[in-house]
Image (cartoon, rainbow, N blue to C red; front, side, top):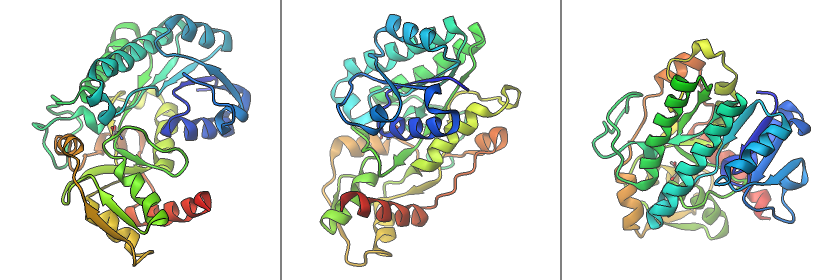
Length: 316
Ligand code: AKB
């Protein structure tokens, strides 16, 4: 991984990943792309940036080929909640975008990364300590595109020899760029609202556990997995990874350790709750630990401390 094209760079993961890769690999070795080019944005202002609609395979090929890329990190995708509102659009963007990126990787012999998600599991999946290899059958369009994507990445490796790699991300929590249209977004919003209003109305019901991870651990995971020798990997795509599993009362309690006056009430959103109920409570991450020494640093309390500190500065 030395010359990298990243799609979907203005998103929650992309904006922080591009920053890290520019530091690690050099500014001129990372080509950030997204469907729009904002006038003033750190990703655009601090390095190479090109407009790219991932539905346009020719343009993706041209950019990667001219840049002499050796790696493509494909992040552009619709998240779970918005995908339920526009299922046909979600299928088109998530699957055609992925197929195009895989084709570019095949034609140019690039190393490849794309994230799957806890959304790739369904209500029949074992809920606790969800195994790496188990029954999936998701009931959301997002989950269907993620399972299909996992299988497609395996296929491109087995059939064409593309060095595809990937993880199943849990909910990602970060202060830099807001997530957009996910089911786990509440775990980001709660910190903003705690600082802005001192209170939060949770759209996810009490007792609903979901896996989560702080963004620095997620970025480390991508870099670590991409750099491990191929010979060490048995499950190259869709590794279960998670740093913590909590329900709304637990994140509330974590915030209250620093802000005792913080309060939370519930107004459960039926769509989000149904999605959350169909996902695992906690993943078994043994394969990631064994095959590429995955080891997240942030616990819930350590993350809360950092989030509140960084957000306070951002919102000041
Ligand atoms: C979402 O909630 O859709 C995402 C995810 C867990 O994949 N954050």
